Length: 234
Image (spheres, rainbow, N blue to C red):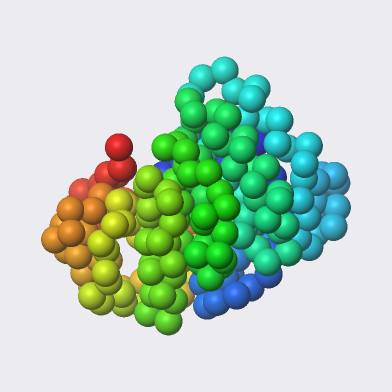
C-alpha cells in the first residue's frame, strides 16, 4: 500500500506484482522500470523482479485503512494476467466487497478474460473496472469491458499513441486520457485528445485529462483547451 501521485486515484494496493508486455502500450512500462529500482533497493516484495507473483499477505491491508480511500488495484501488475489463478482473483474481489467504504479501481490490458471470469466474480458497487485502450488495435477491449457486471466501467487511454475515432461508449462511465512520459515518450497529438473529449461529451461520459506527458511531464502540464479536466463518475 502506498500513497499515489497518479492524478485519478489516492493510493495503490498491489496483491500481485510483475507482468509481461501484451500490446504497444506496454513498450515503456513504468511498472517494470519501478520494479528494477525497488529490487535494487532490496525491497523483498520485488526480489524476483518483474516475474508475476501473487502476495496473499497483501489481502489484509484494506481492512487496516481507517478512512474511505480511492484505490488503484495492482499499479505494478495486472490482476487479470493469465498466470494469476481465478481463485486468487476471487479472493481479491472478496476483500474489495468486504470493504464497501473504499472505491477500488481495477485496470487490465487482458480484457479477453473478462467475459470468461465476470460471472464468477461478485461486482460490489465500489469496484470500478477499466481497460487500457492506447490505439485502435485494442478497441475490442471496450466490448469485453461492457459485458462485465461492474457498476462503473472506465477506459484508460494512456499512453495514447494513436487516434481513437468513433468509439462505442455505450455503457462506459469514464474515460482517462494521458500522454506517455519517460525518457523516450511517443508523442500524443492534441487532436486525438480533443476528439475523445468530444466523443465523451456526446455520450455523456465523464472525461479526465491526466497529462500531456513527455520527457518533462510536469512542465508539459495537464491543461486541455486551457482548463483542467478532472471529471469522475459518481
